[in-house]
Length: 212
Image: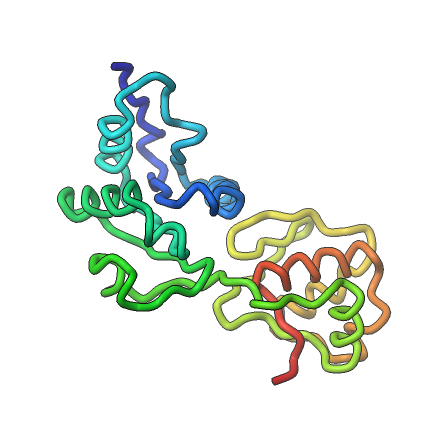
């Protein structure tokens, strides 16, 4: 069996436990963590081929400072995820649950159910791009209360993921970061590039139209 190469000691080491149906979110989470200097491990990239997978995953968990459990209907039904959470408990590792799709409370592993969750669940029936733009122009936009939006001279950072500023619309994005909302007048007539960014954030559950 090949040895697991540990990440750099000066970085926080995190292992991602997830179901394969949630791979797209898990990969975006890894990219966001790595952009913030976290050494993240995920099985599809870091697990050696033709190896004893349980032993390798156990070593990943052992080497991690924390394990992020991506909660969804698929992950709470996964025997592999249940085994990984069991190893987290056995090794007394810190567990960080992130919800990408709501599930009944009693379906969540006991080790995770005791911890406050971080929610990144998108809207159940998302609006089309055109309908989202129209509603934003009428009602404005507000960041989800769990979303963190920061910026420096050249980049935005939303929930840890870095994004270069578009060529236009920079002032409105900074206003959203500073005030956590955009009035309807600001949201109306936004440049196409910025509209795409905001719509993607809406689909991810990071921003909402400011209407009940």
